[in-house]
Amino acid sequence: MADLHVLIVDDDRALRLALGKALRRKGCTVSEAQDGEEAVTPLSEGETGGATIDVCVLDLKMPRLDGLGVLRKTVGRRVPVVVLTGHGSIDDAVEAMRLGANNFLQKPVDADELLPVLQQAAGEPAAADRILGESEAMETFREQLDRAAQSEEPVLLLGETGTGKELAARRLHEMSKNHAGPFIAFNAACVPRELFESELFGHKKGAFTGASEKREGLLAEAGGGTLFIDEIGDLPVDAQAKLLRAIEERRFRPVGSDVERPFRARLCAATHQALPKMVEEGTFRADLFYRLGVVPLRIPPLRERSDDMLVIAKSWLQQLSRDGRTLTLSPEAEARMRRHPFPGNVRELINLMKRAAILSPDDVIDDDEIERLLQENPFTVWAQKHAPETLETGADGEPHMAAGERVTLEELEKAHIRRLLDEVNNISEVARIVGIDRRTLQRKMVAWGFRDD
Image 1 (cartoon, rainbow, N blue to C red):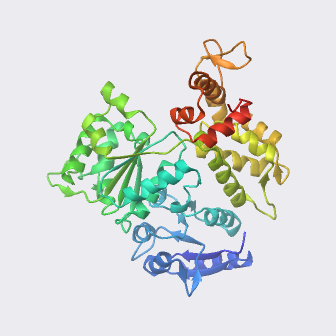
Image 2 (cartoon, rainbow, N blue to C red; image 1 turned 135 degrees about the vertical axis):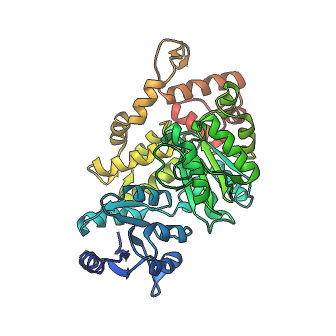
Image 3 (cartoon, rainbow, N blue to C red; image 1 turned 45 degrees about the vertical axis):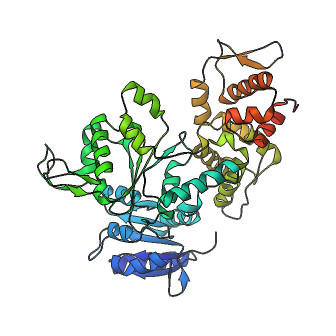
């Protein structure tokens, strides 16, 4: 990687001098800011003294304006940030990650430990550029997402695990008219049920046992920005009712408070679950589902856009190339990857490329290496474990839907498409039924040895 221009933001002058000197010895250009207020302008503009900043090292505990304040004031920044935190302030570090920090390290830290983290952060594209893909499906999705950003209506992102729903939410925020406010991300699957209302709406001091101080909820923290609630299907029914009221009336009441507060943020929700089925089962409110579903956008899974898979894989291999290596895939490796269904989607693909970069002995990664990594891949193991017992080999030697054998997702997809081709005998119609474009279907047929009639 080329030399980095690093901005160090810390009120400790001795630390700035020592860390700056060590990074310069490693070939970095270093600029300094002595507190948060001094860092806001260069981070917002992405440069200082006319030179572009590649990455920022940001201390969290500073006078005048602390690190979290800096992150909130520079939401639209294009500079990746690595935060430094002292012992006992991990909660603040997690909050910093929610506000868009790329990573965090505990003090004390030396240049040998810090530099690889800075290189990784600087090598990751900005959030708005990370929804990679050139397929017709992804072009359509991006266009719909950008149009939705101009509205203030809630957006519901639908997609399988690993398709990049949070990246889509960040792009929605950055393309919105309200992008000057913060982007606040909240995963409903990661919070104990009894803390949901406190997390979302905040609470008054003494509102319940353990509420030793007042807490601002996420609806308040989001201000005029974007509140992204991932895994909305895990929200308890009682919290769903309060969220619906906040959306409808644009006001909410913290737990234990008699005073209502305004809710100004744009709401974006996401889930991999089937919300209509949850509505039927009574675990998700129908009125909230309809309110969130004003602009429902589906992110297509990776198996429906194999060309995008190679675009993403090559992009990550380029980023992961280090120490003079230029990592590439052999044509045979590309063909093997096209045949893999990627049940973990983009997350699985990135995981695969990272392991290939670490474990592959050669710069050109061949199909045998990809096959080995796929067999050891936890996503593949998961898919095999959870695949339905529905295929058996027919008289034609191909797998058909039946009972008695566990199969991979690729075999399941292959059998399903084979059956549709036999029934419909029209490639365009089969592509429409399974939700992929004709060219992708034809490539799959060639890989599987199907005749293109």
